[in-house]
Amino acid sequence: MTEDRIRLIQPVVGEEELALIDEVLKSGHMTEGPKTMEFESKFAEYVGAKHGIATTSCTTAMELSLRVLGIGRGDEVIVPDFTYPATADVVRFVGATPVLVDVSPESYNVDAEHIKEAITPRSKCVMPVSLFGNPIDIEPIEDLAEENDLYVVEDAACSAGARRGQRRTGSMVDLTCFSFHPRKIITTGEGGMVTTDSDELAELARSIKKFGMTAGAGGISTFARAGSNFKLSDVLGAIGVVQMSKIDEIISRRQELAGNYDELLDRVSGVVPPKVDDGVRHVYQTYAARITVEKVRDRLISDLEKKNIETQIGTYSLHMQPSFSPVPKSGDLETARMLFENLLAFPLSHYMTEEDQEFVVTSFKELLEKNQANG
Amino acid sequence: MKIAVFCATGFIGQNIVEKLKSEGQDFISTDFADSPSEEEIDYRRVDILRFLGRAVRYRSSKPRTP
Image 1 (tube, rainbow over the protein chains, first blue to last red):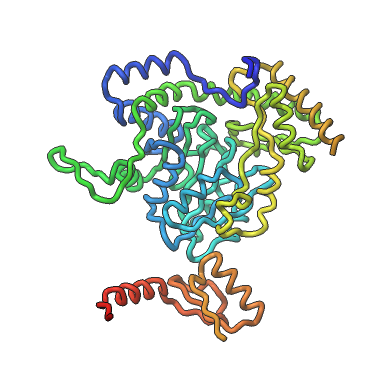
Image 2: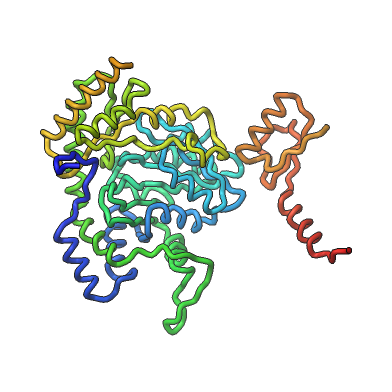
């Protein structure tokens, strides 16, 4: 690949991160320590939550959340079908059963109507996903959860910094899980975070993520319960601390680029840009537009790649993956299938120019027309 | 033949109960939760897996005879 390649995303990291990593290396404290604690505190404050608990990934953050809530064998957890497999896999990992439900064709997120159809006496939790940076429509889900005595664990891997009205992703539900993978808003390479307002859940999460440890008398730890090791190294925590100083600048840039795509794609037929509700702060981890012509998306990805333009699918429809064939499904999951097969994630790199975006859309239009003509 | 549906209050169990009911099958359904179904369904609240688990443990603890 040449240097001219237009990338899907590029992490916004530089000298500031290197300086703090250098400080950690020189301190000799490389496991979880003060830098990760500082990152936890900055992140929790940013999302409006009382507690932030850093983990090794969003996947382990979600597993930790379910373990903290005591979800296990015999319990059902309602999960959208249109998501990355990790959302449902953690449910299986704790021994519970995920029940897959369909999503909205406009927001791409799960809504209360679909969740309601899957509730049974065994349902213990719902795991909505704020996909691509678009926050879930929380109020109807919250009401439904309250009526049916369900916990809500949000997979907000993509949505650090998102808001619906005055309510911030990270402080809307029982436990919210974030990702710091390089394709996310801010990155630590690998890493995740659980945020919560509950002192009790936070204490339990901190214990389970650290071997089940609790502080004991005389500085000697006590192991109060079974636990694991989801600790985030201070090397990565240091990157997180610096990333927090850039998060709003990164989001603003992504919103600006998304606005440019909205205008450019408005002039192209055969594609529907992502819809954003009024009063929502969509942070555009991904700019995923829907191709209205069936069965051309995959060819577009490979044809655009030949022009050095990196694109991707939106995400997966779980029921179409072999691993999820034995998993219960509610309804026909047709919207999830349609989105899996027809969403295209456009390049949204912090460093791309308006000329790059014009080139992307011109190339996309030309290739879409060519593919349509070829059937 | 009478059919027994275990885990009848779960998502799959409920679908099976509805299917059997629509087919007019003779069945009994069980689970450890309260019944979500209408009254005409024959439902017994019992944790059958725990019961079976106890039975298996009891059986495996008995000395084997040659």
